Length: 168
Image (cartoon, rainbow, N blue to C red; front, side):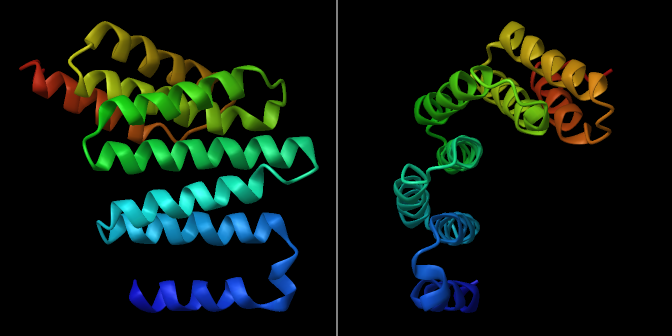
């Protein structure tokens, strides 16, 4: 991970990258995720915030909104890993408002992930009815788009059931 961070620092200084806001934001996203995997959460959040600064300057609306959605998702995950549910939910709600304001069909994967994340966070807060609602919403959206990757949803739904003592 340390080597990866060093290469990402080098990439940020490359002249080719300097003027490309999308590449800069992606470097920040990967650095943030790498710091998160190292449990350096403050550095992780800082990178995601720097990425958002680049993203907000992108002129193309779809790219700006798509990358903003990814940044919100990553910020939520960073706070969830730190067990700071209010901040995790804050960024999930920002992402929900953003994604639900967009009509592009190609964003359905972001929405599936969003609803699954909302289910997980509500399950962690023992808000089981809300969790089930979001898990079901994620599964319905995945099904309607023939998206087979649903194991993450079932994993967290199963963890919620186990937490409630509903092993069967």
